[in-house]
Length: 273
Image (tube, rainbow, N blue to C red; front, side):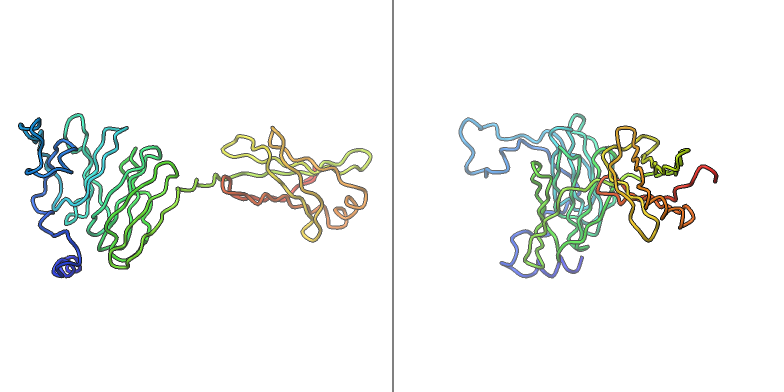
């Protein structure tokens, strides 16, 4: 924690102090109290804003964020390197998640079910899956990331890098491409008409509307999109059929993949193999 002590020692450079992290507890109060001081309370609030609960969390809690849809509170415990997950209904800690070094800021994207934690000494942001309370990716950002905010409409996080004087923008998470399986064969009719047939699937289910190309390895023969059964069917011309015969019936089927599906390839086999 030397880096934090150093820049806390420079008066005027940063308003916050390490004193705010002492105690290791979160005090739950009415939200309006955050913007009012004791001297400016209206007469109607003569009773004040009462503390309704005190919840024990990790050492030096620094940042807090609420997922109102899920009724969950996330607290970044700077000295412990953890995030405490609190159930609003019971005011109890339901999970403690290990993150990076000196977590300071935390923000939630409720629609995506994602929690972003800025690890100040680590120079990273930990991304937590809210459904499982598991860290799914650790993203490197600028020096001393301190604060983080989320725009849930575009699933984008903004991280302030105190030491670098920059803001890092973390885009929406990309889907993980699904593995595919490609099978192919060569059908030869009685009239020596060559038909190339390939089937593209993922987890045993056909994938439609995806381009599958056929080639001899030296010459491209055709490229067709798969139909609703995941089939790409290409009837060769006479010159193309002769070329396949000349290459000992060697025909490759390839699918290049995209952001949703991983690529796959196979060797098409004639019926006698």
